Image 1 (cartoon, one colour):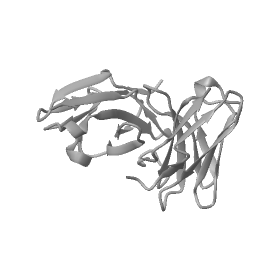
Image 2 (cartoon, one colour):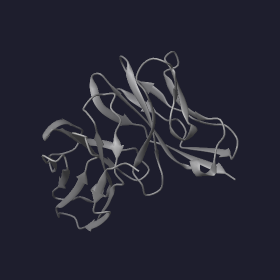
Image 3 (cartoon, helix red, strand yellow):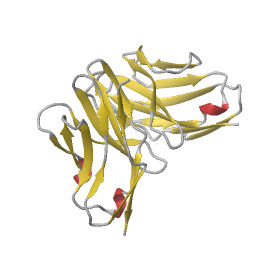
Length: 114
Length: 113
């Protein structure tokens, strides 16, 4: 098991609502990335934070936003939820922002949008 | 566009037999290649990575992978499969120009007793 934790484990929302997902990074890691994994697909990169600054973003609309806090914990916020947002959301921390750095994943939050 | 491909959605193997899960890449420059495993209802776990140096990389749980530049492949292998190896396996890459890892679609490995 990695030291990355996520909450909540499961979440059910209705279309149009807003949701906040939380992640606690592994000790000593200053970089956190968020991924969306739809059923039967590989993880899709949403964005990455390095020392509280957004460091890169994938092909996701602005209603997906995030924060990283001084203790390197992180939040993913999604506004105006759509049915297609139903997925497993994964948080991963790494010791740096280098290309060679291994990502350490949390167990994920399963979001269902009705 | 740069990508990795996992050509098999599912691989079936008998316990005790060798297993191979395939990955090919299309990346300019020198890629960094990774394998991760995902058990049901769990996050991904790191298995191994190729950065540079020896083309044969050894990782967790007896897995290994060989970086083959001429064939642009990075196949995952294990000499003797266990039923507990049954899971979803993801190949991923990043490169100097993009430190964000990009994942393949995944291959479901089923090891039969």
